[in-house]
Structures are given as structure tokens and as C-alpha cells.
Amino acid sequence: MSTTPVQEVRAAADALIAAFAEGRLDDYFGSFAPDATFVFHSTPQRLGSTAEYRALWQRWVTEDDFRVVRCVSTGQLVQHYGTTAVFSHDVETTIATRAGEETVHERETIVFARAADGSWPAVHEHLSARTAG
Image (cartoon, rainbow, N blue to C red; front, side):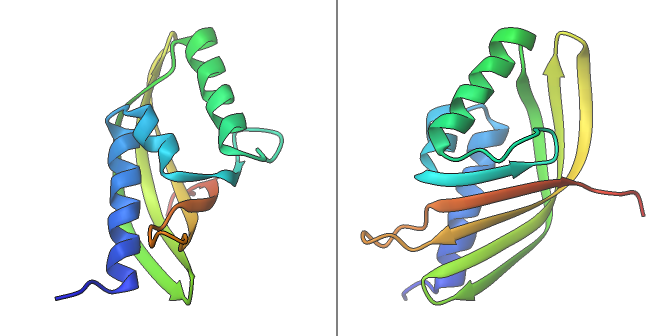
């Protein structure tokens, strides 16, 4: 039985989230296309490539001993549009820095695009703070 594009995108998103949560950075950053873009509420500018995001991540590690302790994804939705799909969810992430641990509540949208080899790399990520409610 073959898989549907929605199932393939959900699997790609699950792999990306698991790699993030487990600190497998090569797998995490490998989930994105090289020219993916990133918009985070915690950074003042849009990041224009996966390499730029990875360099920022490394700066967080170097300057503040940043690491992800755990990540829980809920409320997942995949919307499929031909060779593109939008994955959105709520994210609860516990991070550790020199200041200690903090849990942040966010909403995230990740856009996936089917590659020539049939895979679904992420091409854009947008993260925003989730308000209480």
C-alpha cells in the first residue's frame, strides 16, 4: 500500500521534530533545504538559509550553552497543495542555557516542498509565541 503526500509530509515533520528534540543537529538541519528561510519571533531578522540558521544555533551554544531538553508537538495539521505542503502545530519546548531551564510555548508553521527525489524537505519555518488562552 502506498503512502499519501499528507502521510509523507507528516513523517518528514515527525522526523524533523524528533531530531530537534533529541539534539541530533545533523539530522535536524538536514531536514531543511539549503535555501530554506526562517522567521523566528526571537530574532530580529529573517534567516536566509539553513547555513545561516545553523551558524546562529552554534552562536547560541557557544555564548550561552544552549540546548533543547525536550519538545512536545500537539495540534498538528498538514495541508497538501500539489508539490507543497503546510505543516502547523503547537510546540512546547524546554531549553537549557547558563541561566537554567525555561519552557516556551509557541506556534510553528513549516512549509515543505517535494524534491526531485520524492523527499519533502522543509523550505520555510515560521515560529511565533503562543498566547495563553
